[in-house]
Length: 385
Image (tube, rainbow, N blue to C red; front, side):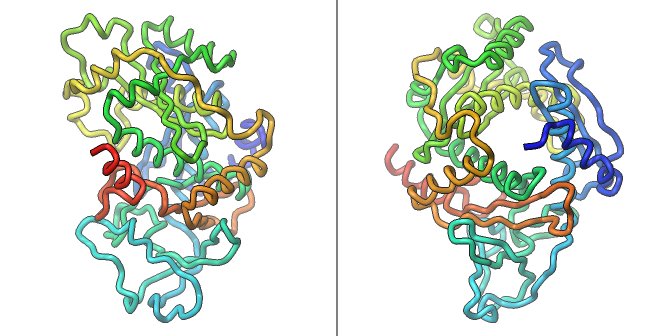
């Protein structure tokens, strides 16, 4: 893997091409001090402000830059299109992605002609065609499909981008399943940051506590066995408050085959979420967020204390991206998740790679889709009932 310094050097010439006009360090707007950076694209077709977080400034800066580039590539992908109906594709494999159909639309008829793009099924290495609109991220035009950055990721190489995109899909699946549980079940997943026995996790926890905040971690790892953590950040004196605003409590989540790295992702994302609200620059933050009060359920979560063990690592510390990706794909096969589709969004670019990872067998985050839940969530709901 490249260092963040090398990554920034490689992609710097591409920033102007993709409409990035400004990079800003916003860490100092909060008192916690964990690095967060913003990247601005004023002419974006979706979000115009992108954020990055990390252990160091250069980590956070590279994170913000790569998010801006991946969104730009998804808004204006230069992909060869093929216009046909599913029936006309004949013996060629295609997926109409019915799980991603937007509210107000129906699954595609196999006789309907539309634009397709080429993807690859990572479970067998074969070409598979998917609807172009399902990978596009352009809020300026109507779409038959739910437009989301879920599974969209960038990297120094295509395999690295696939790895990050797949981890995001696993994270969203785990979060959906965990959220469906009753608070009594969620309480059993609360873990202590100290139990990761990692000096960086300890340092972040100390910084958060010294700034007057409390950190809670929850093990959301699903049956897939890929460590997934959720972080909850709240004022230390929360229990003494009669009123608590929704924006006073922020959350973050992270997935990684090595558990402590999943925890680092969750913690830094929770800090980033605070700065999202403090800066007020994100296009997708509604005014109500600043006025609404924390729910009773959220306040009950703030009273939970660690009682679980940290999740087991899926991979060994020090394994490379390729080895970890292979291990994660093996887990998906073992759990019979089905197709894992990767679409390269910038095939003619050699300075960085952007990929859209589609895994219909995993649950999606909340969004304007015709189908809110998939089979995994529905089976979980039946068990809970």
